[in-house]
Amino acid sequence: MKASGLEHYDISLLYVEDERVTREQVSRILQRIVTELHVAENGQEGLKLYQEKRPDIILTDIMMPVMDGLEMCREIRRLDRESQLIMLTAHSDTEYLLECISLGVNQYVQKPVDFVQLASSIETCSNYVLLKRKIVRQEARIQMLSQAVEQAPAPVIITSLNGSIEYVNAMFSRLTGYDPEEVLGRNPRLLKSELTPPDLYAELWRTITSGNEWKGELANKHKNGSIYWETVKISPLRGSDGAITGFLKVSQDITDRKLYEENLHYLGTHDPLTGLYNRAYFDAELQRLEAGREYPVSVVIADLDGLKDVNDNQGHDAGDRMIKGAAEVLLAAFRASDVVARIGGDEFSVLLPRTDHEAVTAAIQRLRTNERDSRLGFFARYLSIGAATAKEAQELHNTIKNADRLMYADKTRRRTSRKNIPQIPL
Image 1: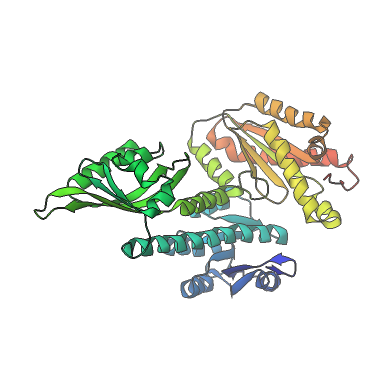
Image 2: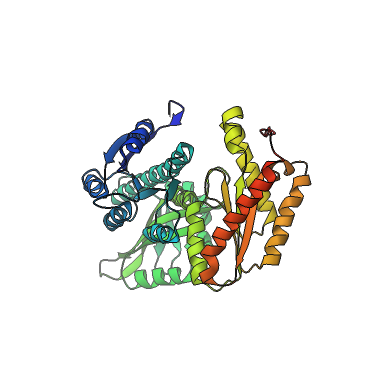
């Protein structure tokens, strides 16, 4: 639901900030966004509150007395690896960035606080928390059904010792699309998909033929060719003499859970507005490239000029169209293998592995060529761009700084030709 123009989320949040004016100002906003808000003045107090309340999201400053934000988050990570961390910082030093990456910080918000960016970060973390809750509820439901399989409807297959299907129930038909007469006498491998590794089937068969129960997840194929996932329990059936006479399979459809997991992964690595990679994924790729051998690596920093004026004068829907248009321009200019990311409200970054200065210059030229395109040209004109190339790992962070510096130089040059507020096309 909406609360004074802000999205409201049914989550709890711990906010830690030692500066009183900032703490009071931000707390007033947070009270309108989250259901439960806890506020602390330093890391030690914040850690104590976290242990007592176990909030869904932690929003914290870095530099604080008694215990700083990084140390507090390190202790929180020891207690729960899944906690959502948002770091408020006025620092951009490599040391702080690497420390935040090592802690698995989920979002970053620059100080002084940009409330649009803060709301966006809370939205991303809240979506993760809410989807995770759905998965937990789904897993609890699956467990309940498997424990009560004799009373509750569940797909059931009984096979002979050699694996021929002797019985299926109505829930099997509903799940697979096959009527009983279409499968009786056939082997369950007719449901087999290419997504389940052959080694898993081999392990399954070894387990049940040795007299043990097998539990696991299988990706199977519906009669219409679509893929469904199920959690499976296969047990040997024994005769009066104890010899195995066949096998009983009881399963539960977990396709929705798998879709939730895929969605969770997507939200963790992508910007929901543009579909580009997000800051967390960009930082992870940056760390991976530092340890790899994909040099030279080029970096492009792009900034979308005029976004604040568009938001203020034409509304956030127009601002969103401007952001998505800029993302489209960047995707059109770079390769599918390049990491094109939105790292802030109007900030974009691109990592280009195995790309020298000449190649990245050609990519930027393609982007500038789009300025003459009837549709993309409008958005390309409002992108200030800087690019630099690292020949080896130790140059990478200086390369980012150089690209950022060149982007600001480009912004200064282009500002004189863009004096009017852009009118965003529909």
